[in-house]
Length: 114
Length: 113
Image (cartoon, rainbow over all chains, first blue to last red):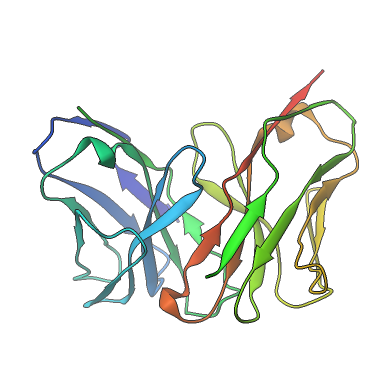
């Protein structure tokens, strides 16, 4: 099992550019989510999905879109990048919705918006 | 709202020293509690968890006890190693609202020889 994979590892964008951060998992997990990690703020939830075709907003969704057409993939789209979106982005997945279930994290994408 | 408060870092210790990283939480329901560890350049990994009051989670010499009366989940290790240098995140999980994890801000631990 590869677990949770993310691409790219690093990305530099100019303000206004668009891009998609890729996330895939091979564990057949229903639940997937995107977090951003900023200094002194821990991880904050951007969007999440409880299954293919179902997505919902987290606590910081503005400026980001997601879709979930398959169980395996959960891409995060930035339509018009802004410097405030400079961050490290983590994708995570877990099986089921039980609150005690472990989340598995990808290695992260470090994004810089100039 | 739900929140997690961790002691600020960085925490610098000598090898074989005793480690405590404090974590307290505020939650409207009955959360599960977690400690995640992030090694340099990597994603987060689950270190240990506890799902109800008085449970003790343990792994790799680390321990934490779910204390409902003090709303705490402090991380401890009796003898740290240089390889324990990492950032440690306390988190809580609740049912509903996307079943998201609410994280603390993280505590960086540096262990020196």
